[in-house]
Image (cartoon, rainbow, N blue to C red; front, side):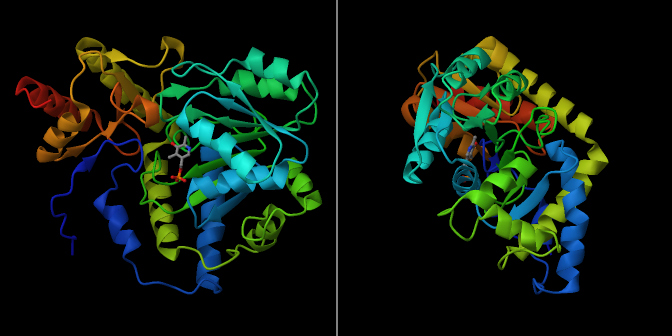
Length: 364
Ligand SMILES: *Cc1c(COP(=O)(O)O)cnc(C)c1O
């Protein structure tokens, strides 16, 4: 029986994003125990299906019942022994840096003007000091709508020897390629409520042999997200502790839908939704991100008409849609439209039409 959707607003927020009713039904399946053959079958089936998303043939893949913020801690605590460099180009990368400090690690930010992408050359110059054994990078900065040049940064990191590359692919995995093997990524982590369009509260990561070697030598890395401990369980297709079983059902179903669409088609759809949104935003407002770095999963609209963003969001809510205000210090000077997950051109057209209607009515 379909759930009562009440006054649900279709989510064009850059996380969480709209969840298909079929996936919500998967979440409602009867719970099963997590130490039985049934669970092992689910995990055994899921891991190889997740590999193409990451673009890795051999990394260990872990399924974790926490949001991606916890995996920031995991990546840092398992892999950083000396000092980590954190390129900071927006609010999420700034928080990644703060998490490093909160974990008691030596860390330096590499500040980049917001709206611009991280330069591989700048990363390379910092690594040339020889001070760092890791780089913690946000691939797609959801606060500014910027995608960082992962390939170039990956190449820069590789040139500097034993430096681990820890990548937050929270708002890119499933919406654009991350190419873990090709880009030499040691830890690639993501929540499931962004481009994978699942309910929030679960995350996945791919972990390299080098990351596991580092983890084996680390003390004080904690228990719950110790990569070596996780591997011990996932090698037997078992979760480490009680997982969110409902998310595993939902992820299994969503992976089948993603496979049916095809990854290349999925990436192309995200690209085209982004182009559609950017064309509209350019006509009506402006774009916050520099041209070469504009994200295919989230558009950060520069509020050049100085509309009242709070009223715009309220007006859209009456029409059944949710978008997001600017993040942090960009709260009123930008607003953000998430076009990630399972959205379609028609859906985006209807949303943008609703924004136009609110503006024309003088509702913002
Ligand atoms: C949403 C987001 C996060 C935080 O993820 P949680 O699932 O809320 O922990 C981290 N990084 C980026 C780039 C994000 O978009």
